[in-house]
Image (cartoon, rainbow, N blue to C red; front, top):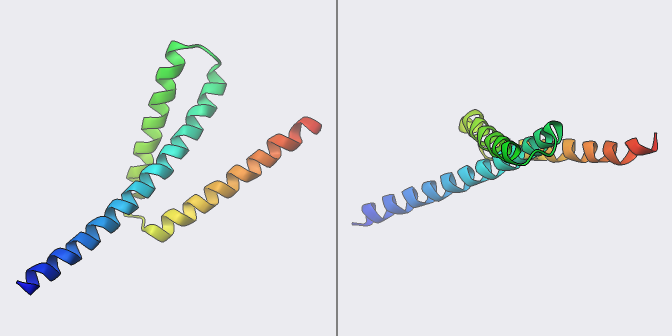
Amino acid sequence: MSEFVGNMQSQLKKTSGDLFLFSLKFVSGTILGLTFGLVMQEILGKAEGENLIAFTFVIVLTTGLFLRISKSWGLATILIFDLIAVLIGMVLRLYIMVAPGL
């Protein structure tokens, strides 16, 4: 009986870790998709109906692609990717803030 309980505890620990890793990948992919969706929305203009469909499509597509690409990544790789993405976003924000002054 104690072997069964020990096996159950180890499976629960592995499952909760996998669920946390998947949710972190999903949030990273969704934020990346939202960013690409907003860029696409600015490129296409302000049309109402088809713009919303394209915006949603880009978010879903980017999230799915990111989940597929990051299937074999571990926690450290996801955190490094998030760090690099945040740093690139900060550099782009700085460029946008400085660019009107040129």
